[in-house]
Length: 331
Ligand SMILES: NC(=O)c1ccc[n+]([C@@H]2O[C@H](COP(=O)([O-])OP(=O)(O)OC[C@H]3O[C@@H](n4cnc5c(N)ncnc54)[C@H](OP(=O)(O)O)[C@@H]3O)[C@@H](O)[C@H]2O)c1
Image 1 (cartoon, rainbow, N blue to C red):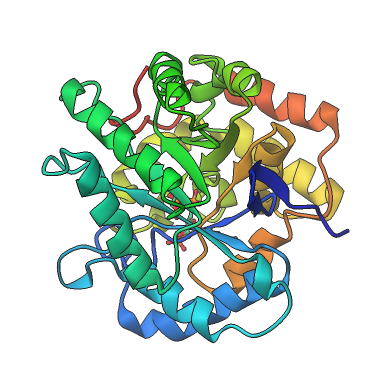
Image 2: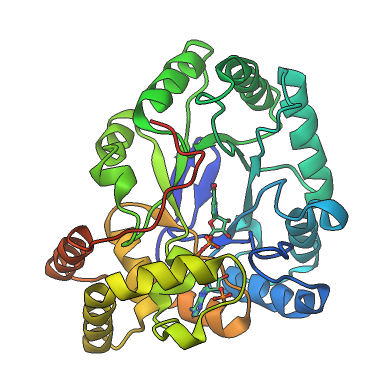
């Protein structure tokens, strides 16, 4: 079943699922090294050829010697891709709210740098997080930068990330007064991170404001794939401690996901991603190799029943523990 792209701004359409590329250049959490590049290009090509045509990146994905690596790789992959859906490719980047970015011009410069690495204009520019909790006066000049990027035609759409409802409403009104609409909100959302909907009420607010929700970490950094069930086979790096704490508390969820996956002829990863779609979000699972990419793309073309969606949600809400929230998530 071919799925229709979603209109998020006047000239910007996104496939109902994107591909996250944080791991494409990040050594610390994801163990990236350059030998992965060949396969990452195949991952990119497979996504596009199968109609998953948009990619989420960030100017902080790849730091130090790997500065901007994810964007640079995407630039190369886009320019070399020939095939189906070529004209539908869209790149969403996130501009980090570094403490030295203080003026509208600093956002414009940052976006121009991203465009340089990408070898094309950024389609959707997102503010990676809000400084409201620690440096509130930094925010408005950066919003002004987003407005100027849109007004100057340097981007097709504006998005925010890690914003809670109060802060989102403020941004919506401020940008609205300048004639610019927020198209998307990107938050950490999955069966183990229901906080943005259940506690923050972002689903209703975004519906009211006509803002599309992008669900990041829909596999909760990989734990919902089911491959890390055993405490002896945990990933190395910072995920190890996190998963060690989560695993003993989430068995009921993993078990039900497995049953539902099998009864649909799908995998647990596909169930996790499909659940996010059924909740009205656009998920962006990360994929580091071809087999992950194939599996994640298989989350499209079918839907969980509403009874399955509710069953999974009820179990998730009754767990003793969920995923910690991003420290930058605001209210
Ligand atoms: N706005 C923000 O602040 C923010 C924050 C985080 C992420 N994001 C965005 O969201 C995207 C996705 O989130 P994420 O990468 O954090 O987490 P995720 O999508 O929940 O998990 C991705 C990881 O899970 C594993 N995996 C993926 N598919 C798999 C499969 N089919 N089978 C087995 N393992 C699989 C891979 O890691 P292993 O193979 O190493 O297990 C992969 O790197 C990011 O790439 C980024 O674009 C945004």
